[in-house]
Image (cartoon, rainbow, N blue to C red):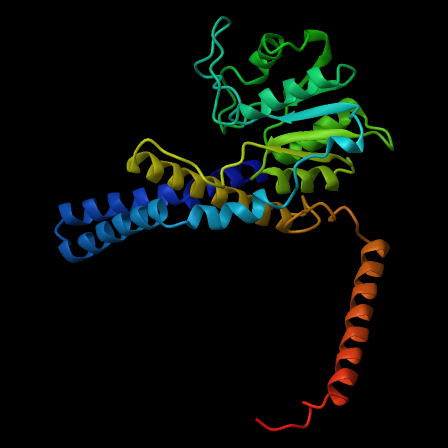
Length: 305
């Protein structure tokens, strides 16, 4: 079984929604064949899990460490030479047509990239994303993305499309082959904030130095038209957060990332990182020594309570 197939299979079975649905269906099946006690317990477990995930801030607790891992991009650092947009849920290619392009849940990636392209007219825009389904058939996002960029004010000639990649690791590898980045160039990576740690991790592993431009935040205060809408949103957020954490673990375990949770400083490795650790430990040792001396000379040091 290939890594791509394994990641898709694990992603399907570990998603909380599928676990809850599986428990519920198993409970109904057990009731139907006469195992009333076991069936009831599984149904109750399914309902309790739905209520807990939908009402409690489980999704926020899982998503916040991911979304807060990278700060918002600082334009004062200088203009980029290129903008890379990761596909995946940006366009609903299965129902889009030549005339009507239906946007997906992560369409903010394209909108943000178009805004950046208009702000920096000299930059190149790269969209990377092929067919991420196990069955590679039908239209893909790359079939529609150039026209979408044109509608958002970005000329066709500025958009480069990478259409072979099926996952984030392939996004990084194929995009690097396509644009051949040079040392000192500033590239921006536009993807959802929750997905940014894994995306940066694989680009760093591929040797592509890139700045994070996170969008599509899901944590924070939000208002919903009904309690049911809030419950559905929280369950979806938990699904996506669990998907990302499983992805991080799987990518790290298989060597597709150098660290488990990539961050702004995780590109510093080898001798540089070892030196930083030694300096930090040395400072901590000196601080502990100063504290011990201060306590030994303190009037309260030998007093009893």
